[in-house]
Image 1 (cartoon, helix red, strand yellow):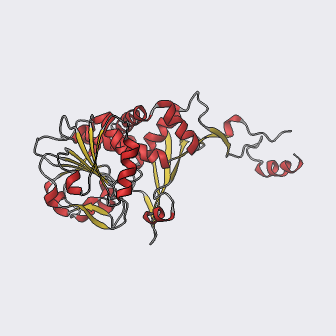
Image 2 (cartoon, one colour; image 1 turned 90 degrees about the vertical axis):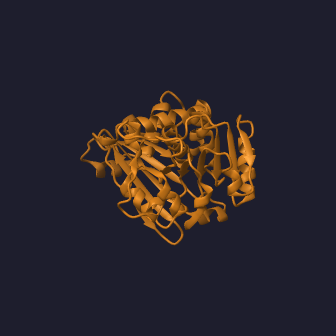
Image 3 (cartoon, rainbow, N blue to C red; image 1 turned 135 degrees about the vertical axis):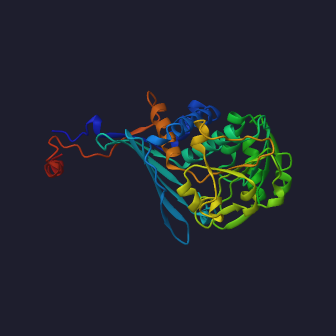
Length: 350
């Protein structure tokens, strides 16, 4: 008798190498566009999902989080960390992996790297928000914070929203040079700036994405004029913000899941009853998005489990018929489900 696992016990695993192969197979900009549509489709059925703030374990060095959700048919979760000090040690600030499982029997149906996929889904979510909230005909984005997510954010805005110019700024000039180099040949007009004030000049969309875990003021109140849309995506845990409080008081604020954002987002600076709009209601046409040319709209994005679910759902569907995964022997599969011990003992003879 062989100990070969049955096909039902094999779980598709998408490694970092295979995720990169999938990106190139589909095309980066097309993948960003399709991911945006997947996230939007799941936001449009918001009520079917289990929703809970992420489960976080904080330390002086960073945070480790679990982000679970289910639509009643498929369960998903993401493991993700955030350690700003890692960059100084030659490591990624954020790493992640995720899993989907069949609710009917609890068996996993996909295991995937999510370091790359999180950058893609975060960019797709930003683009989805800007699609509904940015000024009509926006052509220029300021990208403040030119780290690991900046190129993904920029290309998603180009593909989904239609910007043709990005103005880059980072406190680390080498990061700006890296971002500009990576965006060369993208068809965008890339402008390297030496101050955040220079970067936001003429921008209709401002994206902030910085890593340090602190109450920071990347944008001061006098830097933000009427009519802009702000994607604030760097603040994602308690004690970490990017915007001056007075900007929030002048803005119409849109969030993913208020119980989580009030703990982790820019609005942790405000009273618990400060009014915010839920983005899913805008997408479903139940709440207005941008209503005035002079309105300041702010997407206070901290990342939510439904976005990860959408990204994993996309990957599961798109790897069908490809070789961009490996079957993992993750599940014990005894001939008699009651005889797990016997299966272990028989393995000694093989």
